[in-house]
Length: 544
Image 1 (cartoon, rainbow, N blue to C red):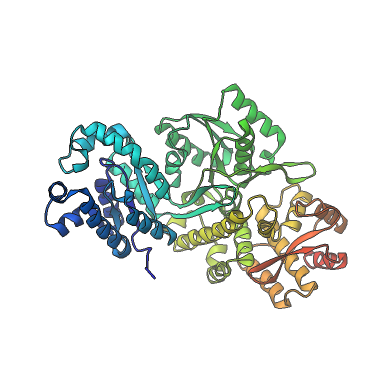
Image 2 (image 1 turned 30 degrees about the vertical axis):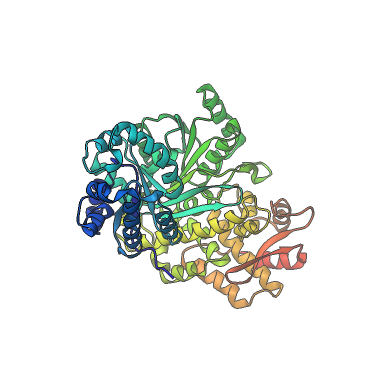
């Protein structure tokens, strides 16, 4: 079996896009090798490419090029590789690129302004494909190749109007990022990009067809919304700044109505977009607005809290709260991209960071048990998270891995069940009681903390009914406590909680429905369990 995942990235794009210059600059920044396959070809054949073209023709050139490109993709270790503009059009190269992508490789389409790239390309004497009317030939090739580049690439970097140094910095951020691809039935594919300065990639995600952007955010994330606004305006988008109340106070029909009115007054159409910047509540509202305005317009989520990065921003569940419960009004509507900028964590207080670990632990309990091992090993450092030392701390790479793994768990379930009719409900482990706690506490309890307590409740319920051992329940409690999360809750009555459980989205008619485990890492549905067992599990989480 071929071993891929060796290069850091493979660059594709039109002649004149700057693949060689930008790729070389990025490689210097990263202190890794840079490989230009055109140079490898000239070394192999012992002559310049135009001369080879003239002597042997394009078909023979493509054969040689294919062999060299495939060898580079499979064997150039930890390098940035730039391909000639026509290489991705060859079927064998295309297959090699898809194989590389399947092993989590990054094929980056450098998207230059056509006029700029054409002018640079036509000044070169080393481009045999542009002989004759160079400008017309370039445009003809662009029309053929651009759709193929879009089809093959799994990430994009726009270089329009950027100096080589600025473009290289964007490429460095992209190459250094972790990317989770979300795809599946009834889902238009999109990426969750996790890394430093991912907000700079907003124009790459939005693309050229969007005219105006409504930037929806809360006041506490002003620093991040200011950066997003600056990035958008530098890319020549018209930006409307819309501030909504923080946290659950922003997830109301009154807030949604105010935003709809603003969009109507400013004439937003399907050619425009929504960008949500903030925590989980802000991204929920932004997605709901995008899903309902004009029956659906483009939107991008830029989560600024750990909880939002691992949960609310990904998966396409959008919604608002009502007096009767949380997220009872909403829709399933996926973003075109999610940009999880790790630099947002440098402004995150310890308690808000810890809360986000509730969803991380849950993902370990229901699928990726490696998450639990990482949490155990790094519990003290995570519990003592300090935003001021985050960038210089070894825990940064640990947190990035935890975010990626948690997002992959969510992507796994979402890709198979976007509308929560079956296995996606497994993501609600700990949520049945968790949502009841939030409602009774008038949302003064944060979501991740409530889910942590709800997970202990679910584990105890599984134990009461003989699905798991007592050791599994104890493990829930010890792991959650080790990272600073609560495992008990003392407010509210049994009857209040039971009434709210009956309103849970998983409930079927008058029957209760829970997600429990039959072993760590393996969730199952539990329908209409004995009410005595449910009450006993509830009593087990009652604090002093």
